[in-house]
Image (cartoon, rainbow, N blue to C red; front, side, top):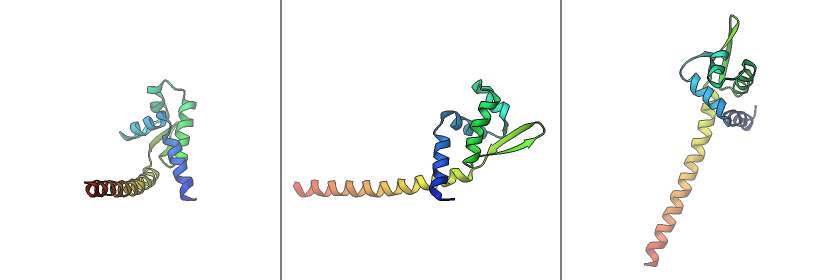
Length: 111
């Protein structure tokens, strides 16, 4: 799969506030679909849709346990997104440092 498609899925998944809250909850440990749905007052079907989006992005892994589905974090895709963010953070920091140096040099030569 092309790297951009992976990042697109990841960023689309975390663009939704409910899905970000699901990831925060799963950071505390595994939970069933029902346990995830309860704080939101959401139907199981609605929560399954959110979990499915997160699962397709590789952010969540689910496993059938008896009659319920247990969810847990799958960190690999989030690491891909963090690597992408760090790359652009370093790029922009270098550019802004260069711009700062340029203005500092120009200010000194004008005086």
